[in-house]
Image (cartoon, rainbow, N blue to C red; front, side, top):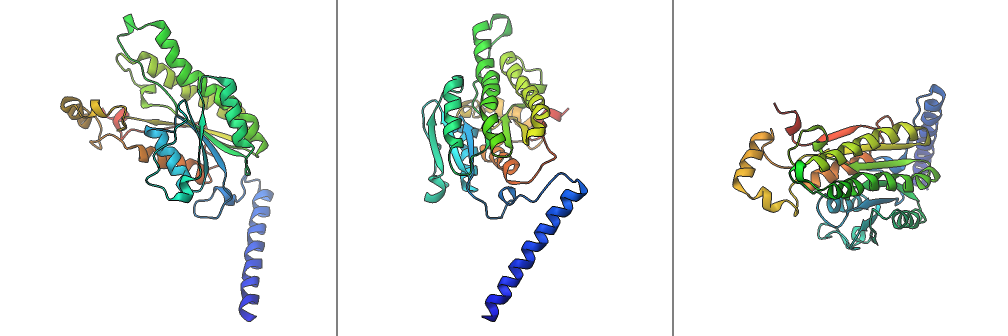
Length: 290
């Protein structure tokens, strides 16, 4: 009985301390409160995050990392396939939910997000990862191909942000992570369409971050450099290209999908209310290497 009383007293005093700190923060106008659902290492109710292009590469790594951290993950892919789950236990793997969805179909994307938002805990965030890469000499590059890259990589990002907006507002705010590229600030030969689309992603991120800040929605543009995935395995395995890459990247290697995933997951799990609209480059220092 004495032990139970002591434990009860500790809990009551802890709760009172947290309450005083919250009221003190509000009185001082600090603009933040303790959010147990966004603090790493603390118990939280399962919340839902939608991830596009989640069945392979960087998107798959992001989905798996978020599921491992306790989130319910809506995996939006054209095929409806889930990412590999070997790294997850059964409980974490069960939090991955497949949604067949073409991100360029605004009505289908909006329907998928609405269904995810209807789950307990609502929609906590969105990761716009789906994208395509078409390249070639600019003087002969088809305008239709340029438009296709812009549609998938930029227009669809804007459309999904719009579709997520009412659900995030209804849930008291949330986070949107757009996956850009360090090509947004490079002059990349034969990659005009891709570079332009990723520069647009940065601009979309900044503009919406300013416009939606008052609604409690924060946006981030995570811009990786060369990351080893199944899509570029052949190129990275070519000795001359690998040697060139190692000479350009100060860390002397390409990135790994799980490194991007950990950064993205940190933006959701850490309480960072004053960070929004920024482009975060994750390229091993390549884009600043002179």
